[in-house]
Image (cartoon, rainbow, N blue to C red; front, side):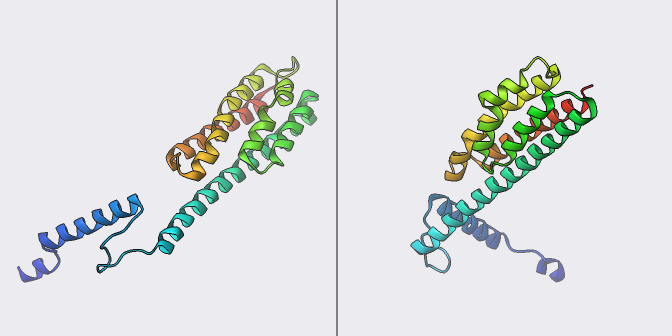
Length: 186
């Protein structure tokens, strides 16, 4: 019986630990920590450092997302070039240029503007462009601007990481479908 009780903590300790953790989370969530950690509080510099770390983390997420989208755009440029060489469909040269130019812009907002701007839109709505490619391009350009508008609110903390990453996933999926349409076309 004694060995059994050594492995367990008393209910009083569990409750105090739970109260301490909940108090800490509430205090951090509100931006102030009062009376925690042996009766002390976090200094303004510590709170500023935590806030800066969060901002830096959010920027790293934006940068990683931009890099992922850049890789996909580069792949789309390569696939378009391959389709041009393989099938001799000249419009894929223009598509390759659109994808390459967008990939050279290391900003989600700038990529969205280039990929979904009027010049690119004209390219993908040319009569020579296969319908399934145009259709998937249009779907991607419905998603990319929605992601672009979330970048600054995400950086400032007004858009959650869950919502931001869902928007990134939507664009990635749309670009992969566009890639599949280019590869699958005659």
